[in-house]
Length: 397
Image (cartoon, rainbow, N blue to C red; front, side, top):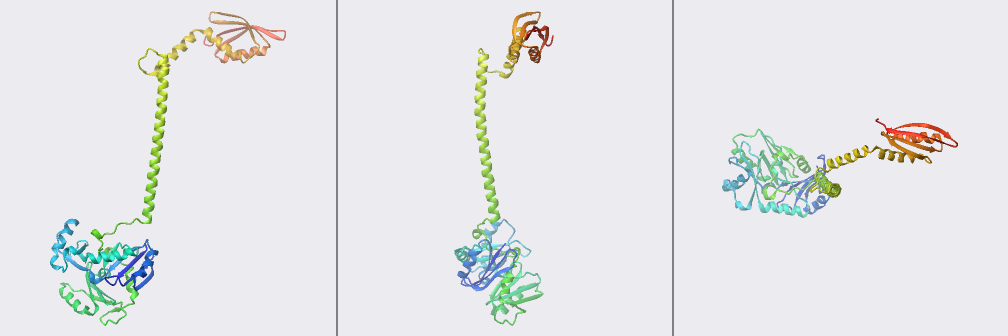
């Protein structure tokens, strides 16, 4: 992720330095002692970058509070009164940011609410909303056995532990450092003083260019710092581009699901309408066939029984069935004339005249296909046609 790291050199933001890095953490721009108006153009061109601000060292007090472990809510309520004697300002005017408990106690960063709100408002005017504001001492290298001091501008910044350190005017460093060492039960094995300012500083053990101070901030490990933006000052989360894509996808999926459910509902209503029409038709047919019925009971079974009964009755009258088969088959063979019909002993005898012998065979095959048994008797040619008798009986007999 691109980062824009701001070092707030002055409490009123009349002067600040910054470094802009790309996604790989490589520096793209370093500005030393610039103006807020110059930063506005950078902010406009890098709206997706993460904004990290380093608070002026003289504006933040770092202390360690001795408090029993409790919930974060109760801790923030009890903290101001537990350390009230160490404070110069009224508790109501101060903002307290806390870190994680360690073996020493609870790390606390204290700043006036007016100061912190002023920084946020000034940065917001040029389109910047920091996700982290951390005290300057906590940006220095961390080593349990060594102390690190950086000289930048007129300030000397000292880190003595994971959440401890202070800053002072560089000309007072020797006195304050001696006092701080006197408080320690365990002395550091080494003190490294790096001078990043353009002025000579005889106590420095190393010298570096001013831009190297900003380059070191580009590799700031966020896990070893303490964010002042807590409680009412905690920034509102803004969705990243990836999160916006996922959110849009979720909205589209929800819309698609709503459409599918709507279509299913419409289909259900149409099927219900069709079912109602079919049920009405079934009731009408049922009432027509069973006029004495007071309700529709097992319509399929009762209609099936009635059709079977009607079919059985029709099968009992073979003559009518055979005549029906004969009429159907006769349509396939034209010009055959039946002269006499005789039905006895479940046999039908038909005398006929036909235009040819072939037409007789055609009629015979048509009747056989109807499931009848057919015999030809006395079939003979007569002039241009033919005469004879067909004996028809049930195919199962």
